[in-house]
Image 1 (cartoon, rainbow, N blue to C red):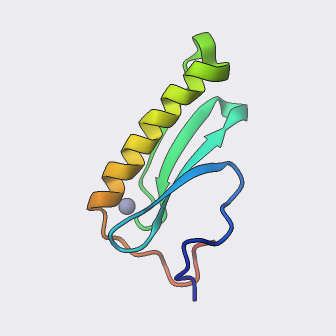
Image 2: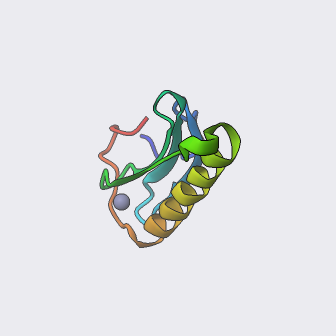
Length: 89
Ligand SMILES: [Zn+2]
């Protein structure tokens, strides 16, 4: 069973929230695409934020992270979707 939420995080995941149904909502950085994505493991909705190309190395990435975290947190508070049993790593 995959009821533990404290297991190893997928590569690139920098933050993880848990929705009302118990599914992880992961915030993942994709340096190659200069983007940070928040994705719900329950309903598969996601929100991607591109880093500000102007100063993407530090500030752009951090502000995208803040946006992704905000989306993940507010989504996790409302979403009741459950992950498919055994389908979440
Ligand atoms: Zn969801």
